[in-house]
Structure formats: structure tokens, C-alpha cells
Picture 1 (tube, rainbow, N blue to C red):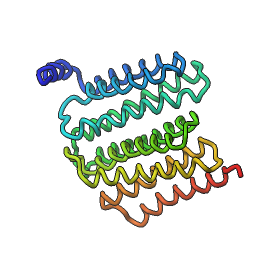
Picture 2: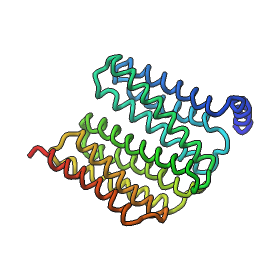
Picture 3: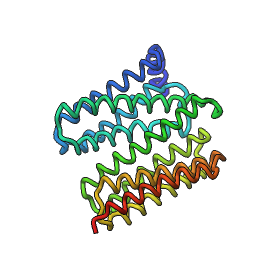
Picture 4: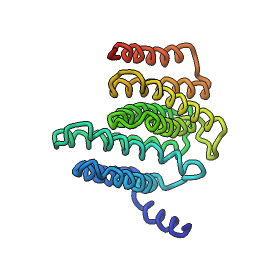
Length: 268
């Protein structure tokens, strides 16, 4: 396995990294495009394909310097992004008028996420604007992914226990990647695990509560996405020692506004 890995790296390293990003984006884009041409009853097969291809193409894109926990954290976003886009697509009318803009948006999103993973892999100094930009883009896409995934999940009308478990797992994975990006350590830190599980548990409990409230799936998904954004943002700011009054006010204000929208959308 080690010799195969060295051989693969020697061959792939001949390709410039940005071009590897383009190749990976095109491969995943074609896979997602092909999946939209078939009925959703093949979803399980394509989800497995996206997991395998997502991991392989991300590895091909980054390749150098992947160590320790990075074998997990650098691959979380590209895979969950692909799965979320795929599930969300089938909420739209299946026609080329929606398929083409969808594919363009997915390609841009995947390329941006791969760039962020590469910056985290390189391990630039946190004082640099490059890291700040990568973190902001990564955090932004986490909020987008949360909304897309939750919206698709609730549209399937599964049992509330299944929804809660699915949200708990995905939120914990996203939070784990986000909290890890604070220090970019190669080993798993206890705080990283505790905070990621805390966020996942809170999100799962909110799903349980929301399952008994007569509100549209889209509104509930928006509320959960804003809850994840606000809670994980506060925890990140705390770990980064940037939890100022203005920061708390910003995240709490966003959550309260969406909470008000959710209450006004309830069909009593």
C-alpha cells in the first residue's frame, strides 16, 4: 500500500495542483450530472459512489502532506457537499433548465471547498488573510450545506427519530471539521470531540422539538441551519479567543430573527 501510494503521488504530482482541482471538479460534476439523469430510486448506489469518488478525487487534489486526523477532516466537506447537492436537486423539477445552473453552482462550490481544504492542509499561519478567507468560505458553505441537507431530509418525511439521528451525525461531522480548523492539529483534541458532539446533540434535540411543530420543511431547515451557524460560530469564536460582545450580538441576532420567522410560519 505504501509503495502504491508513493507511485500514485509521483504520477499525480506532475500535474499542477490547481489543474488537479479542475480535474477533480469535472469528475465529480460528471458523476453528479449522470446521477440526475436517472430516477431517485438509484439514490443508495449513487450515495456510495459519491463517498468513494469524493474521497479519491479529494485525495488526488490535495495529495501532499496529508497526515493524522487530516485523513478525515480534509475530506468531510467535499463529500457532504456533494451528497447535499445531490439530494436537494430532486426537490426541483427535473429538466435541463434547472440542471445546468445547478451543475455550475455545484462545480463552483466544490472547487471553492477544495481550495479551502488545501489551505488547511498546507497549514498557513492563522494571522494571514489567506487562512481567514478560507475559514470564512468554509463556514459559509457549512451553513449552505446544512440548509440543503436538512431541507432534502425533511422532504422525505422519515420518522422523527431517524431525522434527529441524521442531523446529529452530519452536524457533528461538520462541527468537528470546523472546530479542528481553529488549531489545525494533526491529532484529535479532546475539546474538538466534546464541542462537535455538543453541537450535534443540540441540533438533534432541535429536530426532535421541531418534528412536533406544524411548520414547513423549508422553514424548519432554515431555522436549523441558522441554529448551527450561530452555535458553531459562538464556539469557534470562544476557542479562537475572539468572543466579544459584538460577536455574540451578531450570532444571537441572526438566530432570533430566524426564530421569529419560524414562529410566524407556524400553521396553528
